[in-house]
Structure formats: C-alpha cells, structure tokens
Image (tube, rainbow, N blue to C red; front, side):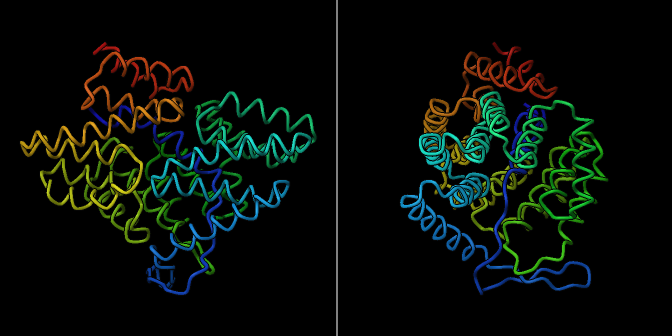
Length: 375
C-alpha cells in the first residue's frame, strides 16, 4: 500500500493544526550549533529543552489550579500540550486538553477568549464542526476577530475548503510577518498544491530566520516538514534528501517521535532493518501507536513472528484506546493500520469513511477508495 495515498488526511490536517501552535523561546543555557548561510545560530540542547518545557508545563497547571480564570495561563497550557502531541508523541495530552476544555467552559461562560481556546482544543482533536460552533459563540460575544480568524483559517486549511483563498491569506500573512510559524503554514499549502520547489524555498526561508534566544522546537519542526516534502509529498521522492532532514530534526529534538517513525520507514524500505529498530526503540516511551506498528513490521520482515505479534498487539491496543476517545483525530492513521498490518478491512473502511465525512478532501477520498477495495 502506497503510504502517500494517506498523506492528505494525515499531513494536511496536522500541518494546519500545527499552525495553531505557538512555539516557545528557549530558557536553557546549553546549546548546539547550526550553520545557516554565513551565520552561526546557537540552539538549546534538545533534551534540555524538552525537560524545561515539561517543567514549565507542570508549573502552568499549578498556577491554573489557583487561577482558573487566568486565560493567559490556559492559553500557554494549550500550546504546551500541542507540543507534547506533535513532537513527543504524547497523546495523553489530549486527555488533559479535554479536561481543560471542560474547566474553561465551566468557569468562563461569558468569555469569548475561553470559547476561542476551547475551539482550538476541538480543532486539535479534529472536531472541526464543534470547533466552528465555539468560534461562532466567540463572535457573538465580540471576540477578537484576529484570534477567531486564526483558528478558522487553520480549520479551513485542514478540511481543504477555499484553498485558493486560504493560500492567498497565508501568503499575505507570511510576507507581512516573516515569522517561521506563518512561513511554515504557507509552505504547507504550497506543498499540498504541488508547488514543491516553492514550498522548499519557503521552508528554507523559515529556517534562515534570525532567531533570538531560540528554541530547537522551531528548526526541528521545519526540518521535519522538509523531510515530508521530499520523502512523501513530492511526486518524485528523494529519500536520501528526506533522510537528511529527518536526521536534522532528530538532532534538534532527540525525542521527536514522528521524525523517528518516518526515518525508520526509509531505512526499512531500503533493507536497513537493524538501523530502523535503533531509531524506533527510544520512541517506545511515547504513546504513538505507529512506533510499535513499525517495529512489528520489521520483526515480521526478519521472520521473527513472536516479537512481531507482540508489537502488533501493542499497536492495536493503543489505536483502540485512542479511537474510543478521539475517533476523528486518529481515524486516518488507524485506517491505514487496519488496511495493512492490522488486517481488519471492515474496520479500515469504517474509519476511512468517518475520516472522509469529517474532511472530504481529495486524499481522504483516496484513502476511502483504497479501503473500499478491501472491504
């Protein structure tokens, strides 16, 4: 099964939702060096940055317990939890965000900012219709139009609605601000539109940004996107180039789970199974089911059915748990799993249909078509 058939449902939404994310400045003193052009840029050591991030998040929760009406704190919590899921593969972050959403609604019913934040949480779970309902409530309460528009644009991008208009808005925003987050969102749309070379240039421009006291999360995110661009989105893949960028992403953030999974896939495709296992093993600490899934595949290829079955069972268990709580967020990933290694065509079809109904994009349609063939 060609993984690219699923990328619209996976990448399109994750890139758009990631544009909701506000990546943090560095607060640590230990650094690694990166050469950008003729400029030496110093980035915080990735493991230290993650530790600082988690410690900071714990402090934010402590403050929020005492100040449940402090929406600046809740906003920071949301951004931090999105980092946990996007980079660290920690999907328990969705449980915490779900709890936070309930608390925000219980204590801030008249606050448009609270509804915007709850909408952001809903979008991160791919509950796009619910997200738009909350945004409409924020509008009725005279919420900040820019903040509302920011979330709306991300949802439209994720669901492939008004792509031409969104592309123009993303371009305008990227040019006016020049900040990496806006450049990344614009480049993602260009990539989805098939403008690969242009997207690559925009990503590199984001990487060349004149960072001040920077966090490694930002360059790691950019490197990962460039890896996806050349490894899976471009019609003519360049796996060596993709591998280079995935490695750079991992160098910035060693616990970058998604980068490890994608790099391992490249190694596996070229028969370097032992190296793929070495890349995946550290990511088993995450709650990303793709890690155990890919390890199962590797053991199956190496004729070790006992170990393959153990990791396949683990992957299925994690997918089942995630689907029970957040079906829309994981329908596409799970459909791919059950079409292939999970070997459950009926379940794959139901998940692909759910995904398409939530986001009727061209690539979601391709996923549904592939699932229907085996149904």
